[in-house]
Length: 518
Image: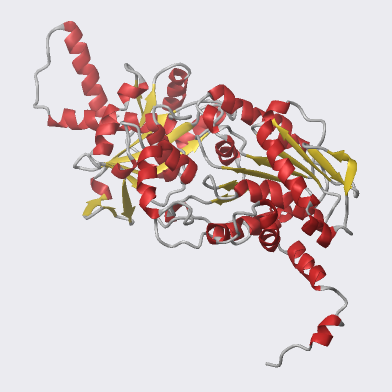
């Protein structure tokens, strides 16, 4: 291939500097690479900084006005703040210097530090050499927390500590919304969620095609801001979840068609942690490793349920496959265990319907689970639908409060109900379930959309945000234990003592219901 003619290069209508500036303006990743040394002169952009996850974040930020709502979860020390809160806002001005960017953090000190880095980038000789003709900074609007362009754009830094806001933004970036040091305080978590929901999120300007929200953080608790967004997402958020250790079961394709390129479970996100230190970190950090590094804040440290004890089944029309065992469905005993709550408030408990099959050996199989917030009017219809679809012998319903009335209504509809009364607290009531799980005798469908949520709730029990699914399965495990105990007892004569006779009759009535005789 012939070498280019130097004269022809000099005759081009733009300089090499202009070409470099234009290429950086068109690519956030190239912009970051070009300007990295302005902020990190002793830390060259290579090795860990040029990993594929940087491309992933830059690609999603570059498509932000198409995405509109972007959630990024990534371990600490992986350049998330530099990319999202420092480089990205001033790169946006190369597309449109009128854009108004509101950048928030939990701490005013952190928000100020990130703001000053962004300003230093814009004021650098390199940035000015490439882009001084596009805009300048307004002299009277250039402070540590706010600086403005001569084209009416600005970058405003704020924090939860700052209270209410007077300014809005076309783009709102909430970076590190929760303070890890105070994450175990419910009041502090609620303060962050309230600030996002009622203050910050509402400050987005209404400009068609020019408004977007970004939340970026390391996970630190099931009820951190990311947890709130994930729980209330109705398909509006693009979720870029980057655990340090790859987990194929959690990998998804985002709205721009990106998916995690890793293939092997446990494959690390980067080489920023030496391989010989990873196991040490995992032991020492324990909860923090799972939450902050693997973006999965449910804790494995509890003594009640452990992730390694969970078992998964597959099925066809006639059989369950439990590891190497095959169990015919027709040989299983089926009932529905429920946990009821009537409310449509987003903070209310859920109503749960767990379809449970007990094998002849006493294993619990949960082929289906329905979890929803229901009104009183929806409750009966849901029971009727579940009853018709899955044809259980009966439904376990806790007989407390409003559920007494619900039981009467359901029986009037011809639905067989077995009422159960709590005589212990939920922690004690979960003992039979704990035994089943530890023995590997609770079987879940690996690919159901509710399995991961159930596992997280089990692992977080009893300190998690919700326990409705755990309580539902706890009743089911108690029922399985009771059934096994009754069927194994020898035939006994009817006792003559009045109180003992009443108890015996009640047990026989329950057993008759269990066998589908009522």
